[in-house]
Length: 243
Ligand code: GEK
Figure 1 (cartoon, rainbow, N blue to C red):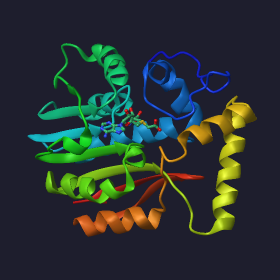
Figure 2 (spheres, helix red, strand yellow):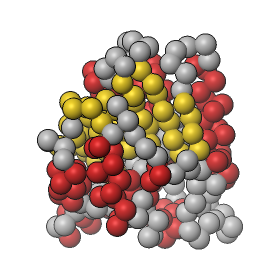
Figure 3 (tube, helix red, strand yellow):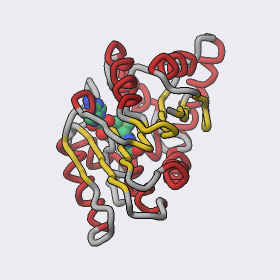
């Protein structure tokens, strides 16, 4: 996957509010790799989990697929071809570039069903694996429970939901500690203090993080039999829930 360097927030014309438009899609691979600690590990482990849980005849959904990184990891790691792989994003700019990235899979089954659609309006069926990799955080908080419940309804017993999110901590001291550590990480990844603070302001009310306890409570309330964290680095975590 090739990507231009993300210097979106270094200029005076930096977006005031964050949107997944052409400018973001053009630099997204560089942006997410330098902004989410452990991103490449999470992507590769999503492939590994899908390899374990994708049963023949089932469907696998990558919800909020962006440029298709998780979709590609799943396609590369599931050892059989008897499943449908559905990748969905509602940003036309992301879907265009994702289609190009998925071109490397041409002539290889299964053919990825890439859709430009709202995951809030997507019906899920027969899913053995559902991926929400840093997508739920962009859904309005009041719509999250409904989405998780619909995902549960569309899943097979024994299927898994992989839910990665930026998280907040109820303990203020820890919350500050992790946010400070995260900003140091971003500086080490080459972002200036001005870029970090402008992006933070642009994401205000667009990316709404919740605590791990809130995510766990919501998945259990939706009907999942169990849920826990399998990855965490500072204020970023990934959970796995079993239907
Ligand atoms: C990855 N999962 O690289 N319907 C569909 N897509 C949506 C919606 C919605 N309602 N809301 C937001 N999105 C990817 C990274 S990025 C995470 C996911 C980030 C899409 C949005 O267009 C964007 O592409 C994605 O969710 C979130 O593994 O930017 O931090």
